[in-house]
Image (cartoon, rainbow, N blue to C red):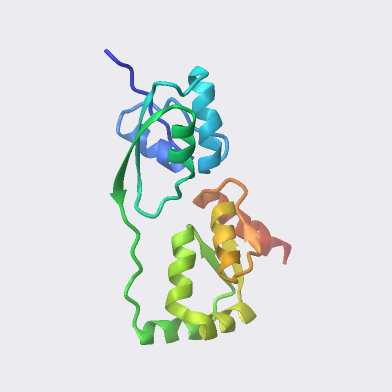
Length: 174
C-alpha cells in the first residue's frame, strides 16, 4: 500500500480538491511553481524516489517538472487542458475600445498574450493611454512587461480574491 499525497498550488485549487473529498497534504505559501520545489522537499526531506503525477496545462512553464527531476523525482506530466484564444470579431474589439476601461485585469500569462494578439499594437497603444493594468501575480506581470504592457497593480497573493482586493485598495486611494 502506498500513501498518495496531494499538492495544490493555491487556495482555489485546494478548495476544489477538498470539495471532492480529498485531503490536501501540501500547499506552498506563495502560489507560484518556484514555491512548490522547497515545499515538496520539506514534505519528506528528499525528492529521491517519489513518483509525482503533475496534471497541468499545455502552456505551463517547465520550471517545476525540470526542477523536480533535477532533485531526483520521477515526474509524469499529463496535459489536462489547453488555453486557446477566443475568436473575437472586429465589432467586439471596437466595442471594447468604445467602452474605454479604466483598468484591465489579467489573470494569467495567456490572458495577456491573447489580449495583446487580439488588439495588436496600435489598438493596445490606445488602451495604454487611458487604462491602468492589473496582474494576478509576478509571472503574469513578467509576461505583460515582456509584451510592453506596464503593470500598475499586482495581487500580493496570486489569486483572484487577492487581485480583487488589490483593485479595491487601489481605487480607494484615488
